[in-house]
Length: 378
Image (cartoon, rainbow, N blue to C red; front, side):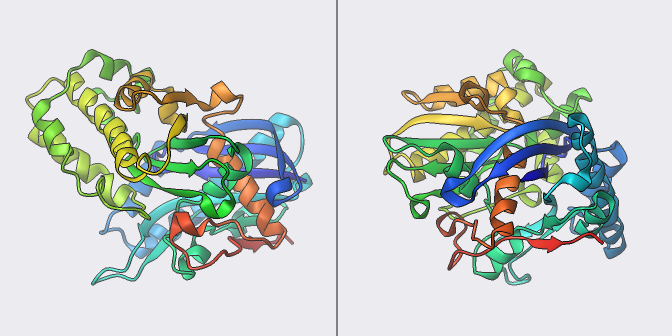
């Protein structure tokens, strides 16, 4: 089958679109990447997403943005197919994660556990002339899970080894880890969000340097750690929360970053970026020390997502995890940028085969369920 996977994460750097050839299902799945691109999100759309992620967004804004993003997701699918020389009508399906607007992983006194990803699948199916699978998180939450992380199933399919335990650490806007124990079955795989990825760093870079991100970690490399801020960030309550757990922009969004920037405004901007970069590395490593390493002797940590290109962050993480090899997806012949989009191709394939693709040990769901809603074209 031919399929496109679409992913727009919390970093808001663009819509990742990957065209794949996929065969089989579950343990027999084989995937070949044919084409990949990232369609940048217009500045105006990024601003609307950030606004809709805040508690003061109104229903009309979310309603409009749902269809606006549907058009953009459709364009991303069309662009990646055009790059390869085919039409979207030749696809067997498109699998779209959508854009997370808000995620409430657990019941609170005020809200019911719930999640909302937008980017209307009916628009994608209509523009592209093929089935579109979307809304992947909600069925897991209906089964008592947190609706995330969803990539562990695909990581088990692609990366599991029989003789050693490895961790797959994605660093997008948020960091999340999948642990593949030695001799693991799908029921042994577990995963959770480790905390901030690039989100806080990117927001600070935009405010302090008018740059969307810290290219290769060059700015952080010029700074020194602010010890007072280091000690403060070590007390972050999410880092010590036991899995299963998920987080997002509602915790580590602009309000979190601006609070820090306002209180540490007298420090050199490079020092602030260095300390926030350290915080991402520390949050990952501290989660490993508390919740992974006591039971699993990791031999490798494989980085994916945009943060894999940040050399300073990678070195800081290596320093935090002595004795464990820290690699990137490219070291294994894969793409750091395409990884999550490929994951949704795999999840969509299971949906088309009427098979489960959540990992209850990762999400906390009570059972394995088929993910996603399918919208068919005319």
